[in-house]
Length: 95
Image (cartoon, rainbow, N blue to C red):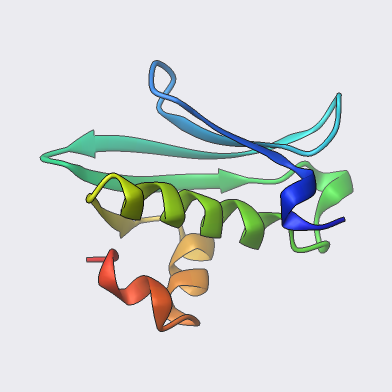
C-alpha cells in the first residue's frame, strides 16, 4: 500500500496522531504539547502490521503536520528519533 492509502488524523483531545491502516488497525503517536513544541513520547504500530513501513509513514505524516503548524518537535520515542535522524528534511523541525 502507498502512504496515500492510509488516513492520517490528529486527535487533540487524546494528544495523538493516528494513521488508520484499515477498518480494524491503526498506528499511533502520542505526544504532549508545551510552548508550541510537540514532545513525541510514544509510537505504536499493531504487531501484525510491523515491518511494512507503516511506522515511518506515520512519523513522516506527523512531521508534515507539525511543520504545517509552524511548530517544532522533540522526539522522545527512540523510533521517532531514528526516523528523524535518517532524514535531512526533518532536521528543521526537530529540536
